[in-house]
Image (cartoon, rainbow, N blue to C red; front, side, top):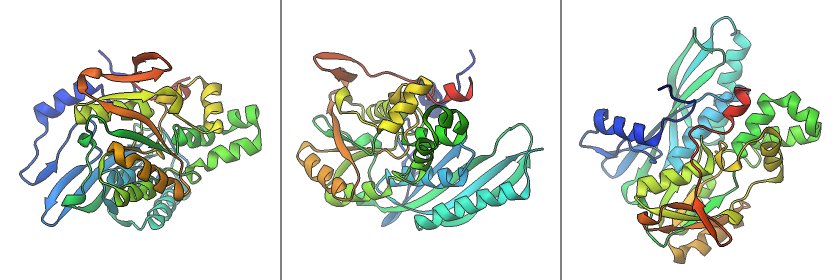
Length: 336
């Protein structure tokens, strides 16, 4: 059976990891569905390591590579510090200006977040039709401050920052600019294009604020497959159920308009820029308010239940399964 575009099905990935992934004695967090990064024991501190490719975006691809990988480090309660980048460029479609633009984009994004670019690899290769950047990010955290996706407890509150579809909005505007301009005009297109930086893809600030305000039980950066996939991954990692309130899920009107125009379900669109946070019920208000004080929207969207409850979406009095997206909704645009 041919697999669809996107992440591997969770059951398949879990089976493969169980069969073939080997973690050494110093690995605290190894490969597992739902965990954002690996964690290695370095004594008083832990090294946190993540790798992620950028495949949807072409413009500002270096910014995406830095920020998306840094987000996964931040979601573990750590500070991202060092980046290695593998830059693959299409044969027959690459000139010096393209290469320099990618290097410049990586440099600017890394400088903004205080990250050192310490190595990598670049080549022009066959078999691809657009640039691909694979980032490997390393960070540090004290062992006692480590946050895992697997730390949710029944009764915890689930918070969402910034809203769904931020990354999808920037990608659609940048990759489908003429279609967006033709339907909504130049000003709308510019606003959506600039979602890359405002509200921005980075979740480092809100992750730090949450960790400094209370003991965070879990965090997760919803990327490919959107907030719905991020919630499923949190539940899988923690062995827990979730009750999510549909009316509390939110996104900007710009993002909603683009999803409607392109026929995309907001729950399943790539959503870097948002952060899912799990905290004890008694800490939810303090964490929410601290993040809001920094000018970042934060709302409680659900509650952790026992595993037997399942992962549910509540619409008024009706409760249904939270949708599962086998591939990110944004792939519909690139395959049309």
